[in-house]
Length: 123
Image 1 (tube, rainbow, N blue to C red):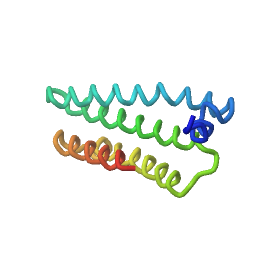
Image 2: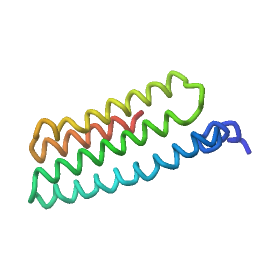
Image 3: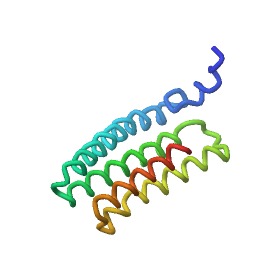
């Protein structure tokens, strides 16, 4: 296979420890995606601003944390690009919590969360 070298650097293939940590990070990422979805639905319904902000921001932050964690577990030798991705995911994770901590309104919270998501997708 032409990707054999890259697959060997995957967290599941590196060691038993990284495999266990990776397998535990995956459900956290899925939970974060699910919570973010609930937050978007709550934003559309516009009934409970505090609930929407809490679920949307915490779900997005949990997803960002899982992405940073998974990136750290891959490839034992970190390149500059890997370090930049980890930094972007970590900063994005903290940035997702800003609307919740600042008590921003519905549209501002949605806009900021979506903007951070877009920026993280470019990493």
